[in-house]
Amino acid sequence: MPLYNLACRTPLSATQRQSVATLITQAHCHVTTALPHYVNVVFSDNWALPAGIEVSILGGVRIGGTRTHAVVEELKRALVAATAQGCGLSPEAVAISTVGMPAQWIIEGGEVMPEPGAEPGANHPQAQHQAQ
Figure 1 (tube, rainbow, N blue to C red):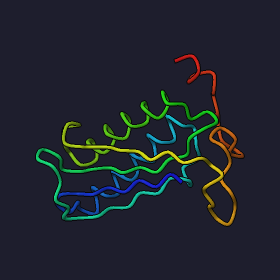
Figure 2 (figure 1 turned 30 degrees about the horizontal axis):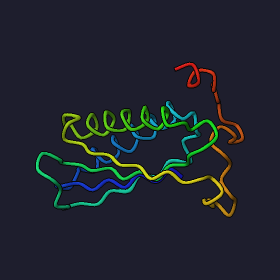
Figure 3 (figure 1 turned 120 degrees about the horizontal axis):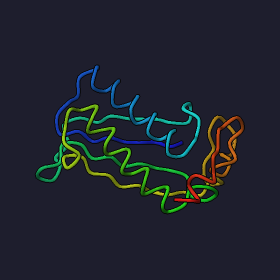
Figure 4 (figure 1 turned 60 degrees about the vertical axis):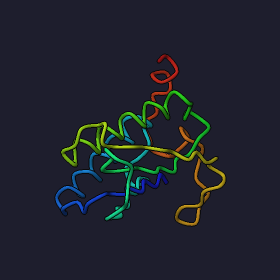
């Protein structure tokens, strides 16, 4: 968790996919302070998308804990920017929707996921997000 599904109008090159996955991981970890091994990115090609949209992101993310509405909105902006950069697109050509799920609904590696902000070994400057 999270799982970011990217529907692409045209196939991305292997270099673009690697760049986008790296940038999405960096954006997610920067905004949420989660560890990078939690981030998953899946690409699908040849999707019929609305006019002007080249990539559409559907992100499944944990909510609760330190993951406030403001943090999720910041995350969405960061993910759009990261995807646009990795694809060489303008941010307007990237759409995003997120589905928030409570941590107790998610099992990863046979373990129930902890609340956002309670991951072992993560760096959680909660005060930064609470102050924003």
